[in-house]
Image (tube, rainbow, N blue to C red):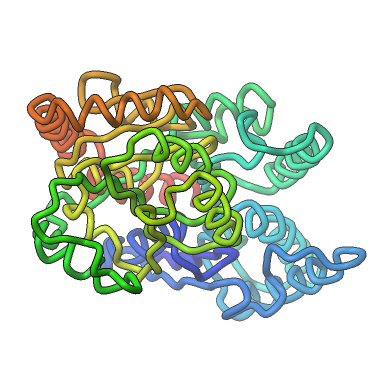
Length: 380
């Protein structure tokens, strides 16, 4: 039995967390035994916080070494930048320590999944910070046996910045269960409406379309552009299901743009994809992405989709074939694409059908799990 230890920095709601859960739950139980370890939950010091002299990171490395000694995994699968760097260094120290002490243990193989490189050139980072992350990933790659990129875009970025030699890199697209269930439009709208204070404004027979997005409220999602676009589309309701550090700033932006009476932020439940059919159009305005799960789920829900060109999104959405793609940070063009689908429902419906077809053919959970199992086996 191959023992796989998944380590991820945070236990909150997000694509990396879904990825780890889906892999762990769907590995062949006759061959693999898996366990998930979360930072701050299972490992006290593993977090994205920055302490003086990085003392919490050094303590996290000590925690990780103790964890490896206790669990004796065959595969250590690291997820997110912080876990990738600290987990790799801890694995190297653990291997050296075992060798020096003549401890009988099989050295674990280290796999890292890049869920969208943090040094992505479209990400809002200063030049020194961007190169700091590049150097960190180059360093940690020395101790990693395989690096999984969730998109060809990330694979090519890794090659461009010489993160690791080509033989260490592979691309495995995220995948979803094609049989996932959605609430009906009426049920989903009712549940969303109940989550909004003073939701009497939502007239059941209103012809206003619902424009929606789902994601963490962080800078990478660039929801400011979506808010600006909402100001250019007066006869529509806008919804974002998500939480995060940008909430206060985004609420202020809504007030300044005079859209706060029809732009709503809904607290996430952890199973927010079930609400997708509430929306007439799904929108992503991101400046940084890996291969977003929620977009795969919106495609599976057969929704008309408008996205910005970011990360692996062009590998999912082909402009005018199964959705519309626009440039980043251009609210007028984004609003024009949304308006185009509002006024041309037949075209929107056809794009939605083609999006669903693409998911069924190219982005299945079964393919993702099978390819990942092959990575595990080839590195033993």
